[in-house]
Length: 443
Image (cartoon, rainbow, N blue to C red; front, side):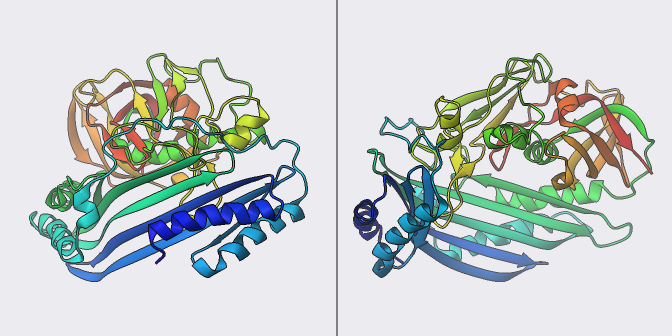
């Protein structure tokens, strides 16, 4: 693995190589990371490994055309730089390119780095993974089927020819557990947690998964009807990710792949509902000093009191509209170019005990099939998993099989409350959401 100091040195070299080759602008994205991952099969550890990664990605711009190349070999830095420039020339001019971000003051962020994670050894990670197994076996009649643990730290360095020069280190830990009841009728469930700090209760992950699986046994049939539907954090996050988020992506809007074209300033949700994207949210999984192009992280109101306020932009899509980027350029590795994505999507509404205030409805823990939603119209039809009837303000019988269907924009307009169980589901931060009326399809 390339040492970080050597990566810094080579970043400056790569920038100069690309300039000498004739690039108008150059961006260098460097990354170094270490991760420990553990796979669990039933109640034993199937695989535990430590991985190291480092490398450089180079974007070169010639007459507005973008070329890209990457390498993790220090001896091929010059070759990769030249290749990036040559690939830009092959692509031809792009008159809509407005330039890479310029130098500006990074945002202030906190709680994205934990020394305990950086220094953790694989033996300690194995102990934490076993805690999930212990938790899952603490509930009678339930056994683990699989699980996953991963933690790591990474350092990124962004350098460009417009003066951007930003270094940042962060950490993350994620863990999940799947379980099944070991006697008929069979029922499955899963649970997870994720954090920037080593503050996760791993025992509780397994325990909660097993408790949910046991409560989900002996499911009954439910009637097909329109009723109140309570979507727990995993369920609403999955639906939003495959509908609303694609609709507010400026690249999709500009290419005619969104039903929200021309609707800025109009009502698209309940008047008490707000959805913001916050790249500075303390401890968020998407929190950073800047986005993956070097634009300082920002707070972007996407929906404010039910009104569509903004789409999310990177520097290219923002330049096409002669506006500022919202700081939503993201990428998963030095081997890829940036694309538009959320940072920390936060759902806000008046909160109360939504279960106690629901006389007749259903509550859904998670959904299957959200990826089949229509990303343009927002229509979706998904299978509800680990769902329960709600009767007179109490969670009642588990539901054996159920589908829910609807349209994301109708769903947003029918949200009439949220619980207080806020949690991070990846980069989406949300509590349980109550939709006043929604189609439930029973068996």
